[in-house]
Length: 223
Image 1 (cartoon, rainbow, N blue to C red):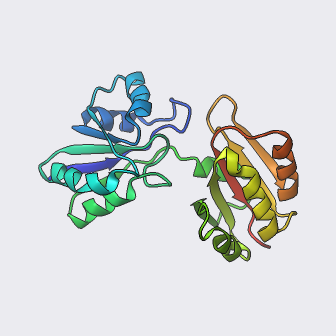
Image 2: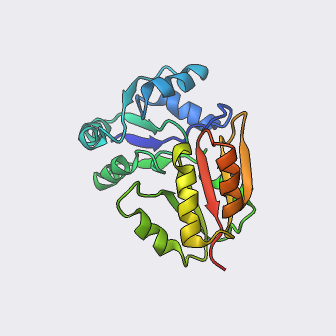
């Protein structure tokens, strides 16, 4: 029986990878990558020559059975995403579940994720929080936001730059313009930035200064 390793990769700064992650990627028989072109840059940087295979949200339903067979035959396989920890708003859940159902060992390494640095940087309570990831694009979006209107815990969302203003406006409608928020973008990268304030203040800021790069929104819970 083989083994599946879930291996976090840097979210920006290539130094944010563990020694163990590098070793596992070098020792594995196969690396499953969300985008082989993107991951190829990381593997080249660390002189990792393990064969890669594409594994992303558009093909994972079809590829999981074949990967399970490889693992059953004794192969060691490492799963990585474009950035961060696979399975957290990235492909990985279906394969992990399939391995568990088939009795194949799964080992998730600790490592990079945008969630925790943004939460800690926010200055908002971290003792209890709710991770929402990406909100539904259309269907169910308003319903989900309305369900969160009374949520007392700190809430963490992922968002893309072109949807940021719309999302902030929707937050104001559901949470009120005075609700504290922290927006972190380009975490670990050269132009990393965290903007804190009320929802109204942060909306004004990004209306005048359009956001670029990956965004993590940390919203205070209702008092």
